[in-house]
Length: 224
Ligand SMILES: [Zn+2]
Image (cartoon, rainbow, N blue to C red):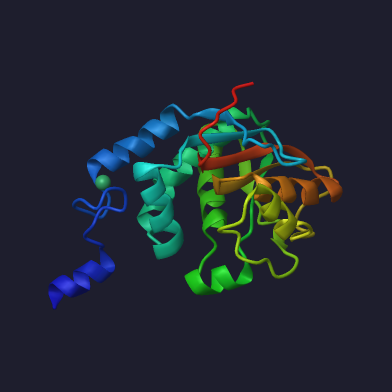
């Protein structure tokens, strides 16, 4: 009984490697390394129209992938800080000026209902705290919201994803016109979400300094 209860409160398997949990030393080291030596500038191929300059902390693989999934799908809050550190490192690669606003890519309303939380928003808040503590004042502002229903992105290619997302986001009045923003998300795949989020922000008069994610799925890196 106690063991079952404990497993509910404190998961026994590591989110990164299924070893002893909830988050083993080796996997913690992988995320720390990503935060210390982020990948830097990344670009999907093909590049979606309007894709901003972007940076990621790590490849979407192994412990990083496990941690992102456990955080997103299973609400493992213990992972917010290490993932936030990695996201902050990716933002830092873009050398944002102090006062930058981090704007998370919003999840669909149904996803938030299902998971009970908005994972990108939580990571943005954690990353803003880290950046501010390290001397670059930053604030997370959930300034985008879904404008309409968006179909499931999984299984769609680059072109399908871009079409599926066209006009998907609405800019809220929380964002002052002319503000400098970095779009943030947990992972970049085809780049369609980051491109569409940037397009919406630019057309609302915001200055998109770039986009940053914890991880990137594509293997072809571009290091301009
Ligand atoms: Zn592990």
